[in-house]
Amino acid sequence: MNPSSRKTLLLVYDGDCSFCRLWIERWKQITGDRVAYEPYQEAAQHLPDIPVEEFKRSVQLITKDGERFNGAEAVFRSLALVPSKRWMLWVYQHLPGGAFVSESFYRFVAKHRSGLYKLTRFFWGKNLQLPTYVLTRWLFLRCIGLIYLIAFASYASQLLGLIGSNGILPAQQYLQLIRENVGTVRFWQFPTLAWLSTSDTSLQVLCWAGVGLSLLLIAGIWARVVAALLWVLYLSLYVVGQTFLSFQWDILLLETGFLTIFFAPGQFLPKLARERLPSKTLLWLFRLLLFRLMFFSGYVKLATNDHFWLDLTALTVHYETQCIPTPIAWYAHQLPLWFQKFSCGTMFAIELVIPFLIFAPRRLKFSGAWTIIFFMLLIILTGNYNFFNLLTIALCVLLLDDTALKRFLPKKLVEIIAFVNSAVTMRRVKRIAFALFATIIVYLNIVQWIALFVEWKDMPKPIVALERWVTPFNLVNHYGLFRVMTNPRYEIIIEGSNNGRTWLAYEFKYKPGDVKRAPPWVEPHQPRLDWQMWFAALGSYQQNQWFVNFCVRLLQGSEDVIDLIEKNPFPNNPPRSVRALLYEYHFTDFTRRQNTGEWWRRDLKGLYMPAISLRME
Image 1 (spheres, rainbow, N blue to C red):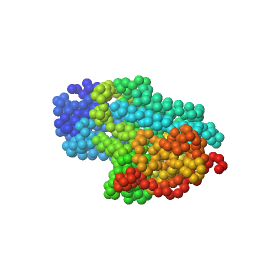
Image 2 (image 1 turned 30 degrees about the vertical axis):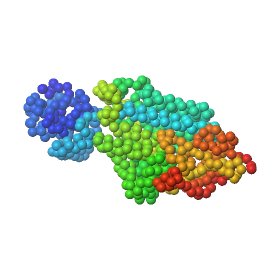
Image 3 (image 1 turned 135 degrees about the vertical axis):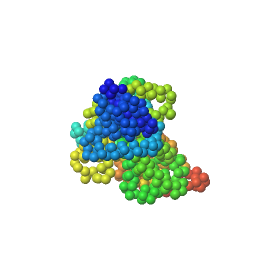
Image 4 (image 1 turned 60 degrees about the horizontal axis):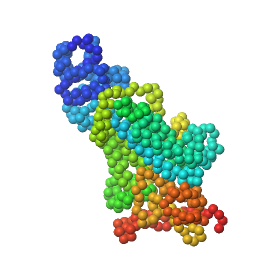
């Protein structure tokens, strides 16, 4: 073949080298038809001017004009035909020492190709073809749709009792207070559609619209627009939800949901054959979120210097002191001390070490994903954390490529994916706008990392100003559950009376009360009042105005609020007075439970809130 007759570059490699063949397959996908590839065993016949020893020593790149390059430079020049890879050649040509380091590394690799081939197979698998994520995105979007469905449906069943006009913290009063004290900037600082109306019907419409749109996202209909609407609706409810939507999984759903808007395909009807390949930039932004979520969760436990975490005894109290334990938590609490310490140490390894595998080669990345998924499943077994663990698992899905997921999904779907991967080329992103978006998200991530070590008051004012500017939208957040282990477990028991002498207890649906009632299974639903009762027990009623409002609603006999609890001892008329007692709760052991049927034992610690009444006695 005459070099001048070629329309593309020719890269000649050692066809007998397994390591070379492995990487050439990957480069073929990267460069496409811009570069032709040929083993020297065939090319030597029409390239007699190049000694065979040079072919064996390094790859040779030959231009259509007959110019020849070898080694690392040949690799970088061929990859430079792809815009996203041009930086490699620039570093080689312009950075001091770039060429020397690159060629030295190339020579090292060339001398150890056999060993590196085994390492490559170990870390990446049977082939090095570029991973695709069409099937991954398909599964992830349906996971997010399901999680949105759970979140909206769960909240819809409680909304009127929590923030309705006769609820504990009426949204109407909350927005009216903001309206009276904040100017027009309130629309930015408190972004919610509830500004249009705070009627009970309007709030319910927000919830049930979210349920309907979640189903559309699961079906894949107009995914990008639906994802945007879901994010707006959940943000709207989050803003007016006040203390009842103040949990880390709520902001995690908002942050994940925001990225999902840009990750979802844009066509109206679901058809995989018409989808473009997902953006790699967004995949990395999701992975950065997962890394931050996991690593922060481990770091904050050590940074607070809590002795339970430092001496690895946190799990000896965690199972019984967490908000709403499961029945399995009772059994886990009985495990010996050595196992509890081992489990705690393993947890730190998963939260502080495993996250780095998110950025590792393919097989290590998969190991990290499955480890985190297994960890989330263990948490689901011992604690009711609604959709938090499911959302973390959904983020782990994005660590798995199409090849890894094919074995778990229907064959017909896999065949469609295979067609898409061969029929659709990678989209050229509108680089300026998208780069700006990605830069802002990465910048906010960096700010969160800085906040781990530097207090906000010590940060430069421009950084703080930008952070405050975007904070209302929860684009990038700080995470870290159980930074301080609560011990012992306190529970508030609310009682009502009509005569001040006989007091009858209200029973909640899920939180501990009756010592003979087993811990419940409630996930993925989150009983938000039960959760807030756990937090209220950590402080005083003066610090929890919502708790006082709750007791007032019981005195008023608000049906919306009473629907949030399991047992109302005053079904006909509300009591004249209510009070709150504080108990210390502990799991029983095997012997006591067998003899008494009690899952809990409790001791009265005193009065949490004195008796209050709506009228004079």
